[in-house]
Image (cartoon, rainbow, N blue to C red; front, side):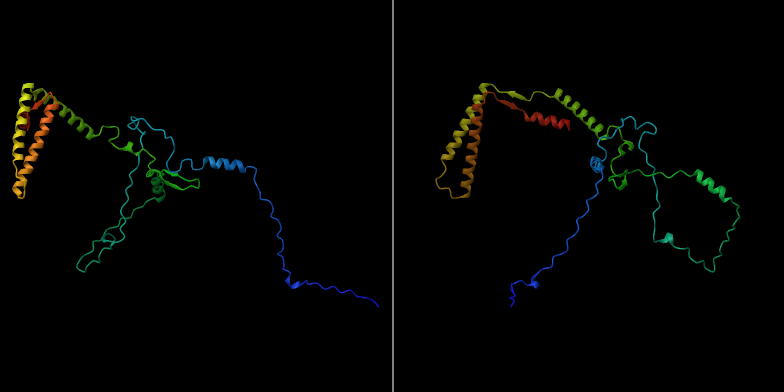
Length: 272
């Protein structure tokens, strides 16, 4: 009798996940042997000027713009205004029955069109190409005249000349300096120094006035309950402060000068 060995296990084929197919490896990228050279040249020339123009522009001398064919010249272009609607585009009205149409005699004219076309082509001036500049390497063109890169100020008639306001300012300064010299020659010394005796006498008078005001201030009533009393007290206090300030100024300054205001006013009236 034969024995059959049977093995049991917990394997389940339904739980086996399907793995995605493996992708083949990508081929290596192509690299040119001139790649580093091209990168270096592109980086050195990129954004060299931008829209601000060249770093160093050769400038002309101020006297060269007056010479023939040395300045910047532009041809003035006049374009007729385009009117989409208006009386200019209206057709002429239909003539009335009373009006007699004037017959215009048409004279036949034999013209050789080939010769006429050749003459027109020879006599016409070539179209001037407008100057432009490119701010990118891809070729974005812009108008050069409106960019501010050209010295258009050389075309102005006032270039190289002194402005008129400077000439007027110079004449005004010369006239003012001349007037001041004449006034200084005619003026006399209006400041005079007072002597020590006059200074002591002035100081004595100020102290005497201060004593009189101090006596009046001390004679005020203790109770000040009316408006006139308040005004009188404020007036006396103000006078005492001014006298004290003047006395202190004279005592601290041994040399005092007196300025004559009447003489100055008279001279001002004479100048007017």
